Amino acid sequence: MENQPLDLDQTMEESNAKELKVFKKRNWKSYIKEFFMLFLAISLGFFVENQREAYVENKSAKVLAQSMLEDLEQDRKALQEGILFMEEKDQNMDEFLRMLHAPGGDWDTVAFYKSMTMVFSTFPFSPTDGTYSQMKSSGTLRYFDQRLVNKMNAYDNQLKKTVFRDELIEKAEWELVPLAATLINFEVTGELRFNKPITKETYIKIQDQDTLDLFINKVAVVRTMTGRSLQEYKAQLLLSEDLIKEIKDKYKLY
Image 1: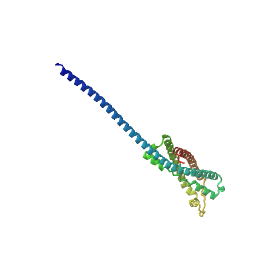
Image 2: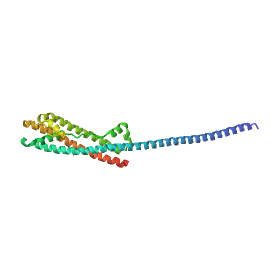
Image 3: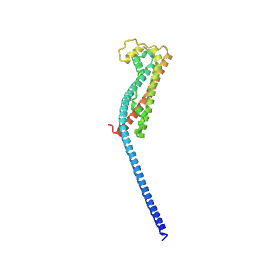
Image 4: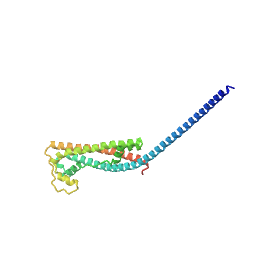
């Protein structure tokens, strides 16, 4: 009889231990459930946010692609006109150099002046690259897949070469100016350049063979630079047409 209180205490302790164990087990299950629900909510939030950002980026990419397409089409038109201009200039300078190599008495003075007018004529190609420059500076190039970005970058790199070649033509022309100014009447070339009737004296003052050789050499340099620039224009045109097709196909811009 004396051991009964001890058994009761022991039984109560065991019962309390079991209840505590069950409670802890239930709490762990509750914690795991709450953690899982929180993880699911966060994951869903990230997914929704990523989907929203992807939608905004895709929509922005299409707007930028449309703007880029308009820039490229302007470039394509300018390049086509530039190629025609430089092909005509190259042909004219070829004929001019043939004239210069002929005896001086056979020169057609008016043809000489017209050829000189063409030698000093340039094509004012100015790339329309505002959209690309904006995307590059703002980081929105990331909206496009890498294949398209690579083509945009290649087009921009070619533009640098094309513009550089144009600058070389202009430099060669300026180097010819001082010599040409001593040989011909620039007032006449000015009239011809603006399609006005010739009212000034047309003279050619080439006094010796050395002067003629130097003049021929400088005209030939302009022609060489024009030929190289023509190659760059053609390469630029091919890239523009390829990029235009790529953008149209990807974003259904027809």
